[in-house]
Image (cartoon, rainbow, N blue to C red; front, side):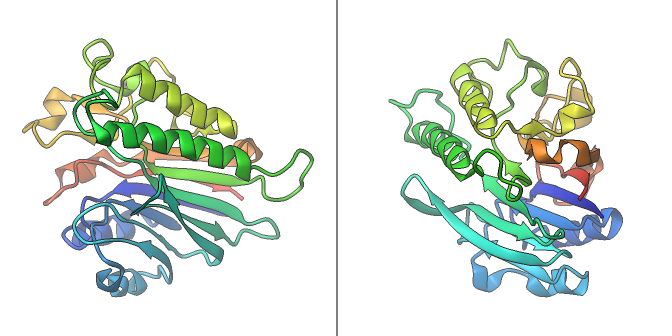
Length: 273
């Protein structure tokens, strides 16, 4: 069956619920992963998703910042909430999607942005980000099924990972080398995470590494299309067991022009599972 998964840092799900509903009506993904929902669980707008057929939901949020959610037309066979770096700050959830006799594990991540100073000694936020990457790489590696296992190998990880790893994932490689999200230490740790399960960078299967590809444009740019100073911070990764199942991807840039737009845009990928 075709399975389309979307990821979107919505920057407040209640403030932008009309945009979320519009996106779901227009694109009709099977699963939507949201980050930065900024919403306690008891205030999450469940009814808006239920009305559109997204009857399976896993939410993990808090007041004012962070927060992740998975809303789905596809049933879950299980769910889990994970805490990282000794903090209960709502950044990682997992749902197993019912896709035959071998469910697909789906991780939704909101990795810390890291503040403005790319020095872990001067900036505790940056130190937290680096520690998060180290921990999640170790966790992915430990969670991988043993060699020869026939099940549990199909996994997808999505979210606002807050690193633009490639030269053409940013508008200026040289100017952003000392800017948080594209520094060498972040790129190295992103690569370590990718190697932990040999993750496939799904959008880059369709767009060559030497072509620009962005999912975020700062609110500071009034004419974001003209300046086009973007970064690719939002990712969809898949394990090698799904390599032959990858069929399509999209980045829906037009949402950046909508009323009360998030500074991130949705990224989608389709798999034949």
